[in-house]
Every structure is written in structure tokens, then in C-alpha cells.
Length: 189
Image (cartoon, rainbow, N blue to C red; front, side, top):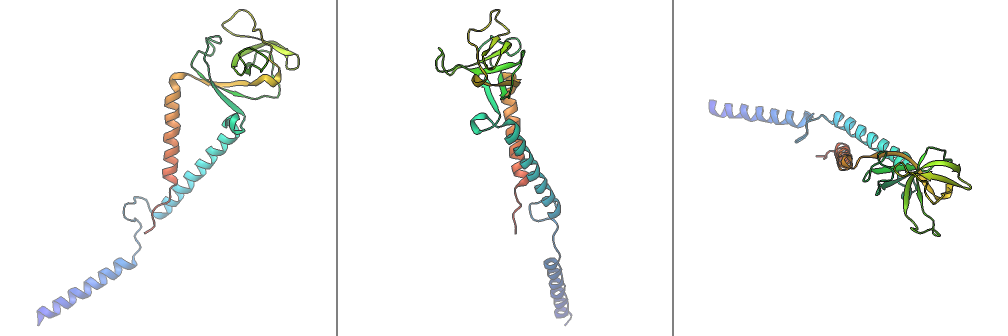
């Protein structure tokens, strides 16, 4: 008789335990290490950072080919060395006016030999209407072509050493993937 009574108590206790397990919310879902509130805050933070960085890119770093203010060019000559060595990546930004001493990137017009080539030089004197007299840092004589404001792609904003280009691209890729992973919504069970 005692055998039947103990099995009934065990059954009742297991029913109580399973009922408690079903009604008690689990702050940690299977596979997650953060409570739901912290996951949500982390996700909101990651989305906010991602949208902020995207806005900064759109406003300041978007290429001119996509309607942005900046053009990116790899320097293929030594005429601006040592200021800008061959192989560096240069970012230029379109300006409303240019002044003496500005490093500019200009495109040779259709009527000139080398049509479409882009050249980096420094403005020595002149103006955007009659044409700037430009001179490279590594060449003693001024350039033969006199670009006008319409020929100028932009003023040199900054440049990267070629050796830093690949690590920089990798760092941006890792940061982008990390933000996407952090913002990804958790699985709902």
C-alpha cells in the first residue's frame, strides 16, 4: 500500500515541477547568452550606429559617380612625390572655388591629347575663368595645360598610403559585418 502512495506523490511532484517549468519565463533562450531586453537594446544600438555611419558615408564619402561629393583616384605618376607618392589613393572633393596652393585633380578635355586622363597638380597662379597655371611638386616647369574650373574634378581632401589600403578595407568590412550580426534579430521560439 505504501508503494502505491509513494508513486502517486512522485507523479504529483513531477506534475508540479513541469507546471512550474512551463509557467516560469526563461530569461535565457536556448543558445542565447543575453536576456531579451539586452538583446533588443544591443540590436537597436547596432542599427542606430549602422544608419549613422551610412548617413555619414552618403553625405561626406559617397563617390561622384553615385552623385556624391568625392572622387577616389589612384596616383599613377611620381610628379607629386614626395607629397603624394605613386600608388597612393587620393580622395578629392569638388569645391565652388579654388585658390593658389590647392592640390587639384583635373581631367583633360576632349580637344587635348590624352583626353579623359586625370592629373594631380598644384595651382601656381591664375583663375578658374581664364585657366589656372599649375605645377607639379616633382617637376620644375609648369604644366602645359591650363585647366578651368569646369575641368577640375576636385581639391585633394586626403590620401591613403597604398600599404594601408587593404587593411583599411578589411577593417571596414569587419566593422560592417559585425554591425549586421549585432543588429540581426534573434530567433523567436
